[in-house]
Image (cartoon, rainbow, N blue to C red; front, top):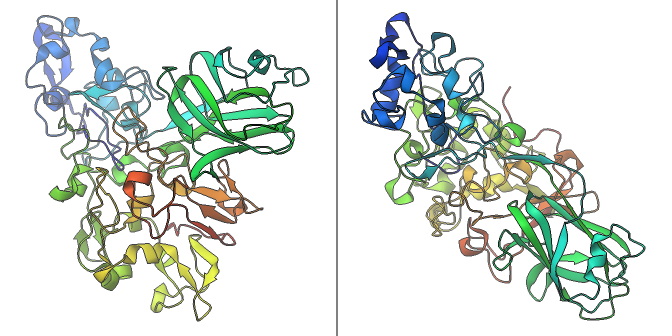
Length: 528
């Protein structure tokens, strides 16, 4: 099983080729089973290579009577958003050696209606093979109304229980206090929190969450800067202050820690509530194409490694099972990562991003006013630009082009950590900043869910990109580019951006970059 930023293939492939009447073999006990399906599980390059370990699926002597579809559960995962075992269209039990529901056609492409076959494993369930968990590319979908926690587990605020009475007129808490620990009663999926205060001045908070009250993770950074650290700014006017979290983990406990001010807050904190209201992932805000548009489904899949791609092995395309791409009269690798050659000389003519420009119009994404021919774009046709920053000729830079041209001699400064091991190893490429499977942040910008080690949020929230609203303020919930006026990345602390801060790349001066522009109606340059 391979994981990482571009994997979208299924964990097990029951029927790689279309079934035929001769493709069925009798197994022990006279049961009619799919020979192709058995071969796929036994020794196929794309399968789990069980090697005649019949007991993995059969109880006792192999026969139809000894099979329980419960044996499919560990690998195919019925517990996620897509039931990989029992779904009548994409479930394993309904696609075992059946001619009418074979997964792939004779050209090794997903059959019509089977496009979400891979999602049965690559969702928020627990598909695991060889101790490797299938990465969740389908994301999260959760919704619900604001609600109060079940209780307050601990606090140094006087009369902190007032925060749970859902009565803003009575919940008056003295300002003397620095923390409050809420208990939700059971693990909850949470995306937003809000605090009602009667403050007449700003207050700054840190927010932590998790299932162990003594070992909580920071789940909200914020954009307000206090004492060189990002924090959540609340106030100064009386009322609700709501915000979307930076990390979306299931948690039972949430802790608010006030870091400033220490006094003079009138009537203090009155009420706290939380809700879940979030949807992201491949079929929500990702590319939504059939997986075989990008992935070679017949290539090696399950190998016992949680991340097959390693920069020093130069195996990006095989590691993520990417298909080769036809460019004019030439067939080229999907992506060149790590990038080699001379980025500054190649630029717009490079095939380093061939898979991306299989659908996106390269001239619109990378064109500018200094280019020739079809790459001449004035005004720019990308929203990644800063209209307030012009050169000596009054021209605005195309930030997509500037990034792929690289830095340093020949543009080959290794700014990006392409295999997510903490060490930069490649000049910037498209997937340095974009998670093509969909992200909690706009424009599929990276947020760290897929690059983190399986089952963790270690790299979240990465660059934590947010659109600026009509007032030029970063809005975590704004996803409509036409309602934005620019964008902004996360501030972590003083000094330049680097992978040990943002888990992604080096940045020129600091890790918070913002830009302002009027949104263009034509964005991304998608080909018809």
